[in-house]
Length: 81
Image (cartoon, rainbow, N blue to C red; front, top):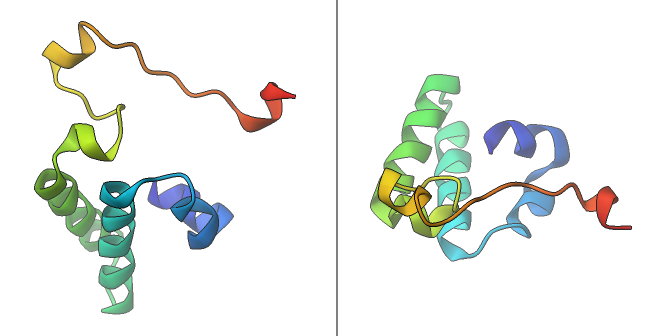
């Protein structure tokens, strides 16, 4: 998630997520602005993921029980053309 922000920019990535995911990105941005390094940024984001509830942030963050009934995969936007 954060690697994509570094490649594509925050505004492009914010458009991909609803409020819980945007809160995770905001937590990463705050950690970075406070001078955080990679592990500190990741720790801030993980804490926010856990606070929001992993499944509300991304369906890639499912429990084993949820994965048993839901299959998640990504489709590149260029492949939809």
